[in-house]
Image (cartoon, rainbow, N blue to C red; front, side):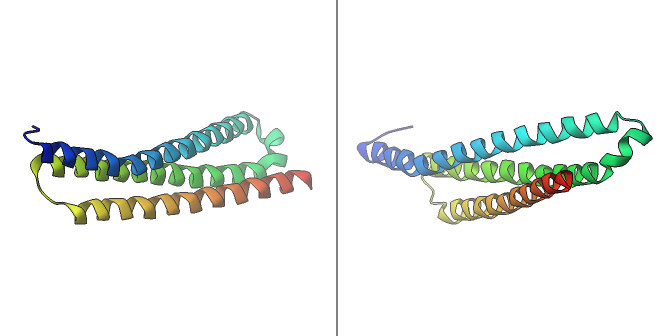
Length: 143
């Protein structure tokens, strides 16, 4: 527990250092919210198309193909965003564990934070690919 003013200072610094990653978690949560909403709408549309008989479905096969590919990209993006959030949370927890146990874990914190940034960027690229497919779907419908 906290035994001296130095310990209080260490905890204060840990809290200060954890604030920025907490804002990052909020951003990741917002991205997840948008992506899960898009995923739900794509799944609903796919279910509607799959409910058609073969003759009714024929004109919508290209659209269904694009929706299936979009869903796959969104699943990757969601998984990567969740993994990024996990890594950010782990880096925050490591800071506090290090303060409590009086051990210095900068390499682990750095590794988990860099891993979260890589996963976040990969998730954003998956999200971008899904958006490109969605716009392709809109152009295909227009023709």
